Image (cartoon, rainbow, N blue to C red; front, side, top):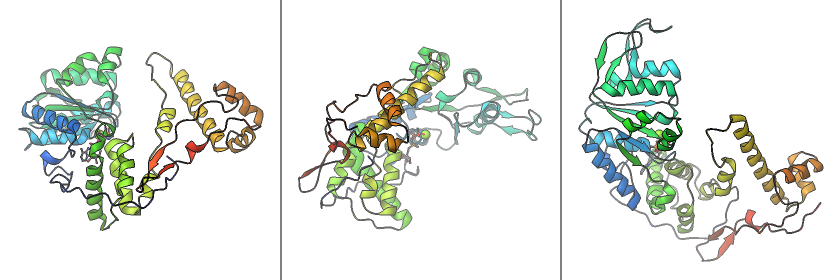
Length: 380
Ligand SMILES: Nc1ncnc2c1ncn2[C@@H]1O[C@H](COP(=O)(O)OP(=O)(O)OP(=O)(O)O)[C@@H](O)[C@H]1O
Ligand SMILES: [Mg+2]
């Protein structure tokens, strides 16, 4: 939402003080790391506690920023292995051979630059937990090597011959649908079954919006203490907007907004950073198809983005195509061609989208600027 939404004077949102809200999310109190009173997060907490009690592989999935890392740490700390290390490795961040050596370790001379022997993460996590994050991004050839290691938990370092027996609990994290990918053949299905003994799906923040006030206040308190600031309490009407927001970045986005609120002061800085759900839809291609060549999928995504830009610029100029062409720095003819190619109407005939209704504290509703554009006639 690029537009700043004017909000009338509003009462401050009542302070929510719970035993949870006073806790830090730094892992010192595992039972209270994942905050929230909603049924969704309470169900997840129960699943984490149940899974912690048994020594099986756990797959934690969920959108970006939903708390997968936090859930993995909590699982480890509630388990019998908590006195031993939890070792995390990000499968997406480390390429090929380097990943293998990170995971399995290496002997001197195993490859250029390998001067001394080094244990891998498997050995480092012995008796504890190994957290393989972003497992969906693991290269297919590495998937077979990992599977082999998981079959008997015997590790041979790169360039070595000796087998090291390791005793680890495996937790994997992903923001992808691995079941789907296993069906399509882009993720090994035998590896999928091995890592997915217990599956925990982290709820999105938009599916537990009743937790937003508690979480926002928790982060405001946390960063106020950290930065030595005392921001004004947020108003009830601003809080209502936050509760209704779709949170594409989930908890991480909420945490960043709270930080912004503490540092910059004033809720307009928070509200102006909220994104319009329609923009998120436009930028993401509807579906990623594993059987379609990259160039075709890229072209479709670019077309979809171009369509969105043209539409927004036309709207900004009340559908005046000459002004829109000037803004876009293309010729009038080129714009007409692109409008046609994008399947947009030559004149504004489509029904305007319902305006964004924002209710102020006084009960008056205001309309965001963008949605007030309703021309039905095209201007040349
Ligand atoms: N229920 C919660 N209560 C308190 N803080 C939370 C909660 N869930 C997530 N957070 C916080 O939100 C941030 C994002 O969480 P985390 O890194 O665990 O998400 P993630 O799912 O691993 O994200 P990504 O997919 O991007 O790796 C962290 O700072 C974490 O402390
Ligand atoms: Mg993560």
